[in-house]
Length: 364
Ligand code: FE2
Image (cartoon, rainbow, N blue to C red; front, side, top):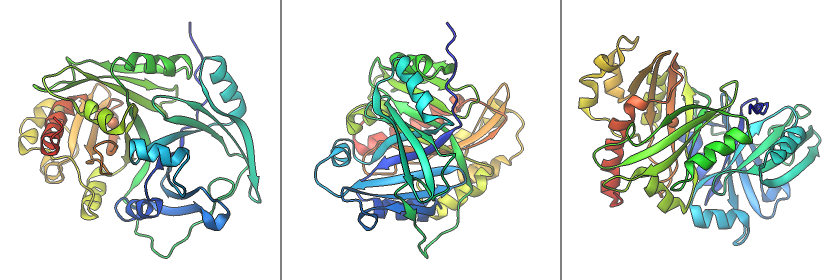
């Protein structure tokens, strides 16, 4: 049976629940060059939370912290540490998309509701996905405010310049043992996504650790969710380490696209963003593996940028270290030059690098 794909216009925003939204906002401004957009908190009449909205290109991040000791945000932060709670998706009709997902078996987070202020109205609805993560469907065609109703413009004097980040390329979920197939099926049955690629432990393993992955995508390729689960290896894989520290399934990384990865990475490094270490040896045989590329290998080596090729072109990518205390969520920086894949050829080098990090954390 062919289920029609939900009409999605892309990622609307990604919301993190964090311990201290004010300080996190400063980090995303200073380290990643996100621009201040909107704010809601005590000053806007909220009593239970404060949220900072930042944007760069089409990437919108919301950082939310609890102002009370109890409640959903405080509980989430206590259990998972800082992490992604909401992957919001832009739609033209939040009511019909919601109704369709419920008909197809999704579990409701909240029913369609209209919210409005002097800038117009939005319609929001939400369903649950893996772990405690939710998808909010955002219909904002009748809204001209800075973010959503209730938010005011946040316009501080401090505005470090951007780093060339443009949009969400994909968002990866880590799920528990034996949950990958069920989660992939959820995106197939409820969202009408198709599976682009699947990897098993034969593809993605080192001497010590392994994982499995299925990449689910919508019909216009604007929304892509690779889903990972751990696989048995001699030692504990990075996915298990994530699950241990996050206390369950959750978003592992957001891949952010740039049109000039060399400048973006150089800029991010200068601002103190930490990346996974790529060994010198990675560059020894790289041209044999990926063939002709436009970039100078010496320049890529200098910035420790990874390259991979598929049958449609190549891609350049690099992964940050975790961006909070727990070894859970991180970011990927990616520049696509035709390739539609996710850097499978880099997995082994990458995992060996992550194993070094795990060893230093005592979690291998
Ligand atoms: Fe990725």
